[in-house]
Length: 167
Image (cartoon, rainbow, N blue to C red; front, side):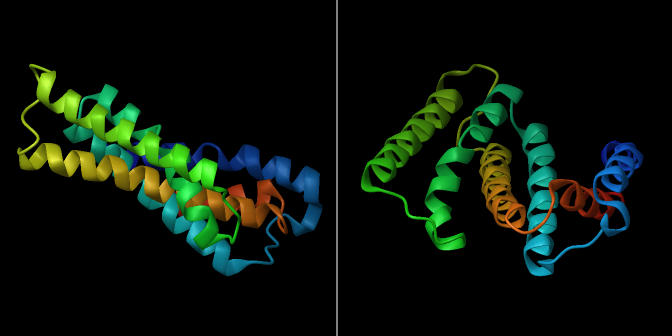
């Protein structure tokens, strides 16, 4: 079952993370200075994971994996708005061309594959929406990790995320 997989994923890594965190940070292993960013990171990480598992229910794994490769596109688009990072015109042009490639991939996959239904099928559309949502949430999560990395150790961030996931 889905929740058993998630529980195992989070719970089994916690003892190792905690031991490493105590070794690295001592009694400050759980000290976080930016709770708002950590909360956004936890929520978007969970939503990204849930939508990924949903996408692979409705899509062939090959299409879901291809959609997951759009993450750099979303990170580049969101970086100026989420973390105020400058993105040049050349990168924006490359992102636009890359997104057109994603649209071509989706169109070709849904029209040419004999085992896949038509794009007008609601479950396929829902699966594609979940696949794109997964990469969108993961992109925001990675941007939050970038912000957290400026002020908080990665092991502490990982401990809080995995603890929240286990709960």
